[in-house]
Amino acid sequence: MSAETATFETGDVLARGRVRWLECQSSVEAIKRLVHGLPAGPVSVRAEKLQPRRIAVALTEGWRGEVAHVALTNAEGGLAAYKIIDPSFHNWFGLAFAMRGNQISDFPLCNKSFNLSYCGHDL
Amino acid sequence: MLEILKNRLKQGHRTLKFPKETPKLAERYRGRPIIDAAKCAADCSACAESCPTGALQMHPPRIDLGACLFCPACSSACESGALRFGQDHRLATRTREELLVDGGEAKLAAALDEKLRKLFGRSLKLRQVSAGGCNACEADLNVLGINVFDLFRFGIQFVASPRHADGVVITGPVSANMRQALIDTVQATPQPRVVIAVGACAISGGPYAGSPEVLGIPPEIKVDLFLPGCPPHPLTLLDGLLRLLGRIEDEGRISSSST
Ligand code: SF4
Ligand code: SF4
Image (tube, rainbow over all chains, first blue to last red; front, side, top):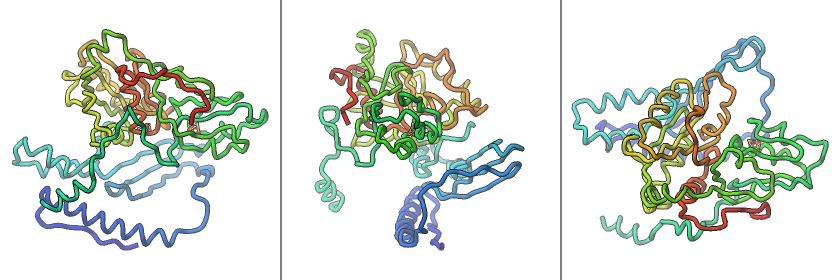
């Protein structure tokens, strides 16, 4: 499936607002397209027994962007580790960069224009 | 500018009349489970077998709301109609034990004692600690600040430091890396203080229970209010907070027949 990448030149709060607006619009378009091509079959299925000693990586689309899931199985086919990284994990560095040379009073506005998740970073 | 004003007028006000009036929730909302043990077949445990968190205890069927994800694998697995989810958003309790629902009469969270009510009844400042939560409980706490629920009209607010707070709201299963930060935050909150556990994770470990990284709320932190759900509906949160402050005055009990 193709989707247009939303970009805006100025790199400020307004730009992030505009990018989000453009992304909303292309998401609505994408949903409309996808809804008409849903595959047949049950909505959920029970997980089968997992293969032992494997690594599985999956990328899914979350509302802040790409979410990466990584699962490792042990010798018995049980889960040995499961890690989820959400886009905020990378983008906090972007916020730190955007804040350089700015006044502290600008922080709340800049921070919320990124709207990153605080969850999942101290785990 | 004119467009904005026009839009505002058209939209009208959005603040709910809660708690005087409870809005009708979406049909697919899953609130307090309704259990009819008489319908439950003695040789069936389909619901308990399907439960991802072990929240279901059998014969008679009982759901530990503190571990329940409201997913609802159990009610889908139940063929005899003994188990379904109703529309009642009132789920808050003051003790862990009271979260066990068997379909009989249930006691809702009672108010704080008079001294604490006097202190916090009209102004309760809370510090939120996300101790490994998935961001959904946090998002539903956050949404209390919008004009629909308008938490601030009750004098309840989230603050940026435990030093400014009257209580701590805990979300997440308390991961090893967040344990000390949580303890420090609670200790930095002046006494008397209240501690509120929000979501299946904070109450029981939720979907993460059993992981070696998940330690749970340390036993030395006494929880005053349990708000179950995964995540809890904002109305469940608001109802619980207002009950704690003694600002919802009803009988505080519900029977199984209520939906
Ligand atoms: S709804 Fe709750 S009790 Fe039922 S299967 Fe899901 S987690 Fe278990
Ligand atoms: S209880 Fe559910 S919604 Fe809340 S933090 Fe845990 S997994 Fe997320």
